[in-house]
Image 1 (cartoon, helix red, strand yellow):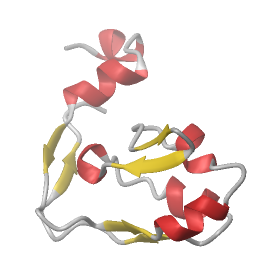
Image 2 (tube, one colour):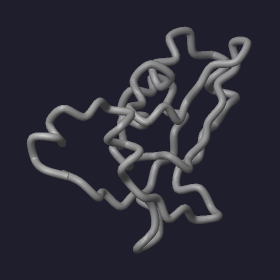
Image 3 (cartoon, helix red, strand yellow):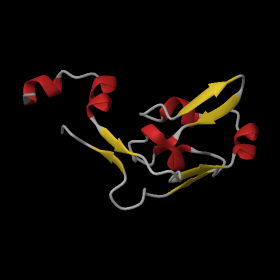
Image 4 (cartoon, one colour):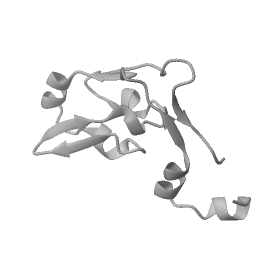
Length: 97
């Protein structure tokens, strides 16, 4: 794939080009009792990988597609996200860019 082709990729296409070596233990832990108290739930809107979703006013989380940007821990107004890098060699492996 050329640089010109990469520039035209949409976010979903770029994420699908990456490879994940997912650890059995999540590198992100969420205190969902704090999520219940959160009115804005910015993690659902701002996570670029879509790891946070909303189902009937309940936040669901899946760490397997995390791009390790740390957005969730920064935007959480309730400090409900305990975020660490995955174990060495695990997590996302960027193939392009």
